[in-house]
Length: 388
Ligand SMILES: Cc1ncc(COP(=O)(O)O)c(C=O)c1O
Image (cartoon, rainbow, N blue to C red):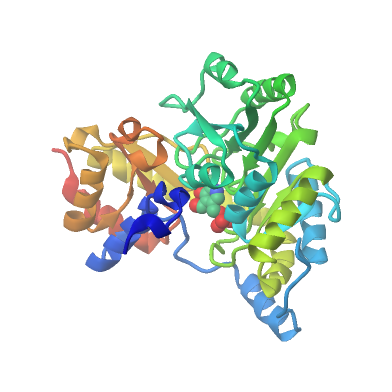
């Protein structure tokens, strides 16, 4: 059938490379270190709370912008963890994951000809988010090995069309954690040019070596111009529950709520109730989570280095981006396909995180949010690659 039936918008999307790698590894029956979902369950008490919520009758639409109990729990948690003061009635919108939160936020603020600054490499959804909302993306390189940005390059990117800058800290795929100095510079520029910040903090509880999480909204000058996005997926190992949220000034929240209502009506009602139990977990749950992932990071780091990779050591999140030059392949995609078909391990080709594919063609990304057993199997297979 002819493509005349399809929108130009969708024509410009490519299939998610991450999902494609998952499909291919499932065909050969290998180990999936491509997609960023844990291969283990959320904490038991959350499972019990979800079942109980269904039994208690939370099975119909919740209030569009989120269950009052969950919005209250979000406000209490961001007060102690993020240093953000929020009002459950004015500032919070519960969405279907951070994914919908980002799309609703963009649709709520973008007008034709608006530009949005994105640091690259970037989480691959930000590309389609800008296309659907009609924004023009302006990419700022993060420079290896520590993925800092050049302040002069960032300054030069701000102009009269700039509507927003997207920050993702801790960062997927690099593991970068934005420093307070970087956030202060961003605050200065956003205030000078009247620009909003959209910050994706879905990995806010996975940081290594005692690094603290700093929410951009808590940085001087950014409180009134920041949309903070987070959710349950990564912190509570519940990517399938689809619970996320935005925290934003009241007038922006009102716009986000309208978009969210028409996109999805609401997030799953019983899982929002279970979310209250999640957000009220004892505080040592979070320090244990970081330690849990730090151990996996160290295991993978050692194994990849031993095999001949040159990994970039992540400061947070649960991915490891690595240089693959030592293996002498033509491209990242060719190498990733070799890993799937000959070694039995799925990864993500680096080029899927860049606007210009060449920039990522000497890298791949491993996800380490997997059981010891899964990681062990992957490492055993990767041993076959050893450069001797
Ligand atoms: C940076 C980033 N933001 C958002 C998401 C998706 O979050 P959610 O499951 O809440 O939609 C991911 C998932 O991998 C991610 O890496």
